[in-house]
Structures are given as C-alpha cells and as structure tokens.
Image (tube, rainbow, N blue to C red; front, side, top):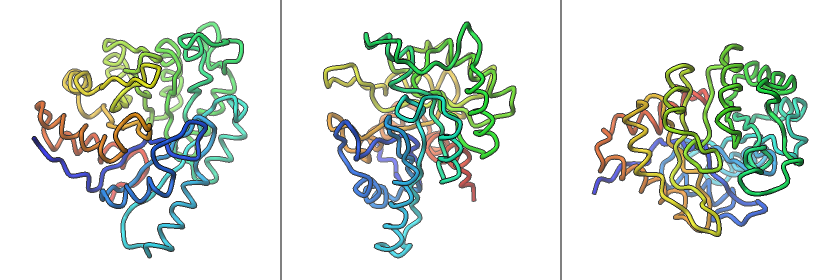
Length: 287
C-alpha cells in the first residue's frame, strides 16, 4: 500500500458542526485535524447558508491557541439555498466582503435535487428557465468575477450546468468547479464531464463517496480513477465532501482516497496537482 502525505493538501468541500445534520467534527475539531495532518487549508461548506464567519473564528482560535505555529487556514463559503433567499446577490456580496471564497449554486434547494428526492419542486430555487440563465444568476456571476471567487455548481442538473458554465465563461470567470458530478442526484455522464472540460476548461470536483440514501454510502474511488485518466488530471480536483458520521473522519477518508489513487496507477505528481496546485490557484494561495 502507498502512503501519500497529506502535508500541504487543500480540501475545498468539508462539512462540520454546527449543522442541521450531525457531523463528525465541529469547526474547531476539523481545524485541529487539518493542523495535525499538515494540511494547508479547508473550505467549510454548509447547506444552511454561510461559513465565512465560522472560518474567521477558527483562524482567530488558531492564532491565539497555536500562536501561528502552522500554515493552516480555514476558508468559508455561501450556498444559495432558500435559507439565504435563494439566488440572492445581496447575500452573496456580503459573504464575499466578509471573506467567503466559494459561491455554491443551490444544493438541497436545486430543482433537480428536489425532483430526484421526490420532494416539492415548487419550493426549488431556480437557476435557469426555458433553457436560459436568470438575471439574478447573472448578477451573482458578476460578483464572483469581481471578487475573484470560485463558482461551484451545487446540485443543479447537467443541463443547467452547461447553461451556467457557458454564461460564466462568456463573462470571463475562470474559477468554475462542477460540484461532485458523479453523485446520482447530479447524475452527470462521463461524456458530459469530458465535454465540459474540453469546451470550457472547468474543474471536475471528484469526491470520496456519495450518499445513496438511508445512511448508505457508495465509494467513488474506482470511477474517480477512470475520470482522471479520461478527462486529465489537470481538470480534476480532489475533495472529500467529508464530515459524515457514516464515513471515516475527514483526514482518514482523504488519506484512503489518495492511497487508492496511487495504488491504481495515478502518479504522485498528478495527485499533488489535484490536491495542492488546483486549490492554491482557486483560493489565491500560490507561493
């Protein structure tokens, strides 16, 4: 078995408490795990709105308790579900001014998410209508560009993703991440992922495991190896989407993920690129 070092890794998709769903770590525990692992940074994600204020407090705690004796930074984000008013440019600009680095389009409020979960679609947050992007989404994209933030596609459908990505790229946004396209709720085919990479040069966020419902999770690792080899490592960003109590703790899941890639023919320099280089660029951490 290979043992890939986690030193300097960046995970841009981790869930922690406080959350409506109990997570394995709270924010401080996640930060401490990151420090122990030698990670460079973690982005906290929540379906309940914003995390940039929580990230700020983690960094202050790190400064006060650890005295700057590490190179770890916690980053925050905003997710445009109904809890923040959906596609809400005012909320987005406020979050970005307060330090949020990632703007995720709707997740649990996305139309496709509600459809596949058998929930009330009338409560969805629309991103497109009749195949066209909504004006308020354009305003959010403008803010993403202005603040040099990262756009994550959330749980929107593959069809919506193409519309959004086309608009984002036409506006000059080059920090676009397709959020876990492998998850059955998103349901993006390998052909569509390859097309997005070839036509728009986006990043495919490939995560550790996916929720199949009822507390059951399916490993994404075999399929992730295929995607890396098919789409090219320079357009695949490794994230865990970690934090569930059903899965290994964040650092264990990430370690298992990287070891699996190494054991299945992915060179260490490519693993480094997918866990360090891409994220450093997206978060503005290039040395």
